[in-house]
Image (cartoon, rainbow, N blue to C red):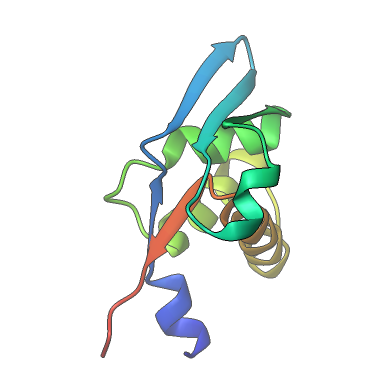
Length: 112
């Protein structure tokens, strides 16, 4: 997958994630149910995670609506925080990668 295709991807918030806003900061809460594999029987029935986001992360996660692509997020972030295009792109991509690893966000990418 190329850079342009990645930037055209549409981030979507996991339906199990909830956002709570307090001023400029946002708390993300997510809950996972125990899976079916044999190793899962050693885990708790429900796993709850809570993540506190700073002003930058809060700004980005509030923009995720299932309609804006990654490049739209980069542009909005760049405009709001007055950053260079490359700096904004690297920051947003790193943040979205972290959110994906934590199963908070999924990114839909065209198969083209």
